[in-house]
Amino acid sequence: MSWHALGGSIEQGLAYGVLALGVYLTFRVLQFADLTVDGTFPLGAAVAAVLIVGGTSPVTAVAVAFLAGAAAGAVTGFMHTKMRIAGLLASILTMTALYSVNLRIMGRPNVPLLRQPTIFTMLAERGFDHPLQALVVFGVLALLVKLSIDWFLSTHLGLAVRATGDNPVMIRSLGVNTDSMIILGLAFSNGLVALAGAMIAQYQGYADVGMGLGTIITGLASVILGNALIKPATVFRGTLGALLGAVLYRLAIYFALSAGFAPTDLRIVTAGIVVLALAGPAIKERLAGRKAPTDEELDAIARASGVVPLGARPEQAGKEGM
Amino acid sequence: MLVIKGLTKTFPVGGGSVKIAVDRVDLTVEKGQFVTVIGSNGAGKSTLLNLIAGHHLPDRGTITLDGVDITRWSEHRRAGYIGRVFQDPLQGTAASMTIEENLSMAELRGKRRTLRRGVTPAARARYRELLAPLGLGLEHRLQSEVRLLSGGQRQSLSLIMATMTRPSLLLLDEHTAALDPKTAQQVLELTNRIVTEYRLTTLMVTHNLEHALRLGHRTIMMHEGRIVLDLSGPEREKMTVPDLLKEFSRARGTELLEDRLLLA
Ligand SMILES: Nc1ncnc2c1ncn2[C@@H]1O[C@H](COP(=O)(O)OP(=O)(O)OP(=O)(O)O)[C@@H](O)[C@H]1O
Ligand SMILES: [Mg+2]
Image (tube, rainbow over all chains, first blue to last red; front, side, top):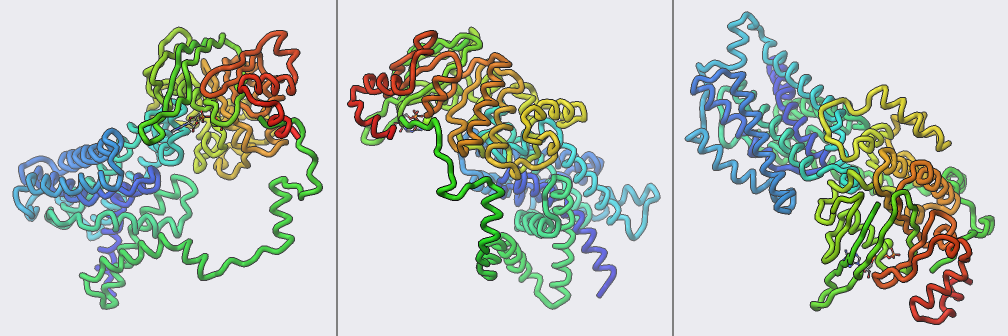
């Protein structure tokens, strides 16, 4: 086992953690399976790479990539809410369109960033040149993104976004335009995914039009894996789980590769993990076979919910029907 | 004050024909008046409330609330002025969020939501004060998720959330129907207390005739989309449940026998 490769997996895990946090926002908070991310991840990479090659500072390039991703997310949101296209389909449409957009932005399928300034070379020039540099950069970034999501979801606006995912009827009855909340949530989420794309392009030294394939599955696998370990009872735990899941997912891939899996087989392994995790409750129920509750347990449950057995029930007074 | 004029709503029922759910209804509810709404299944009570709340748009007619014509307003815009409690206790609250988060969202009814902190210590103190008189102990559980509450507790919380900003109008659609009799009674008493204390203009749909007569200032009966009986003052005070059933039969033009059977 190589410590170097292991460190690389953790680096990547934290980098993809930002992506997982974006997916957490749509999948867990808005309850929206958003395939737009398969397009916004390479979009962020493309925008950042082209800007950097054109002489823009890498930091500005990442910020613009975030905005580009947010705009793409808003397009999906608009199609879903205002044009009443089913969420999954709306996101597939944006993702498909983004493939052309990304090729237009880059002008060709691949933009190399070798010998270009990146956030990493900038930091090295300023004296932070260390084998753990990327680990620190991605660690700090992932933590900042996690904390900003935690903060956002505790504001008045963020509470309304959460309620839109939980109970749209209720939050509408409190005067909130749920359409706007869905668009906002999708924009924030896809902005983060594009930001992850922009950072990873600089880390790996190129942007590629094909790098988005399977982004949603990576994100879902991370969120589901993380939440299996840390119950997402609060937002804080939910985002922590997404981050942890992203790192674990990379480690799992690393070990799968060391165990002799071909890199081309990884997708089916990932899909398998997601299917297993999603089917978990149903499988558990089948395997265990429901244990029959005893009389005592039934009585206890009945007492707790205030049920009086038939016969002991007093006549229901004042209940004339019409 | 709520003023409804000529309000009409039809639903297509297939085969090109329509069902008239609400038929040219005129209704004026004075500020602070508590009106109970009765009528058989399918009479149009829920549709009337849904039209007022903006869940449906009417085919004809106008709705004016406190002098403002809201007929074409979107549902969420009206919600700034109209509080609602639904029949299903699950509908009025966000289950995965805490009691205090739910209250915070309700406190901002109709206001712009910004990036300010949702639940502040000051807000928490307010919520404790608001919940303590209910006697449900919810003031000690502000940070519990709402899904852990019983149906009655959730419905009480929904009621608090619907009324805490003292909206111009409160709409209650059989909001105790899904609860067991004892809990229903408690929620009903809470409703009466809040509506009376805040002097809320209220429409409450119920199938319980005794509740309809005992609570509030006025009772209207709907049948086939129209208001067929409008009781208030001494006339209403004298009215008993059997009287009301007689009135109901007359309005419907059917034999009393049917209702006797229902009563038995
Ligand atoms: N969304 C809808 N689409 C089609 N028809 C509807 C719709 N909503 C209501 N209706 C019809 O309009 C009529 C009035 O229904 P409404 O729900 O208002 O009655 P209600 O008085 O509330 O009855 P209940 O006491 O059963 O709740 C019924 O015939 C119903 O089938
Ligand atoms: Mg109804």
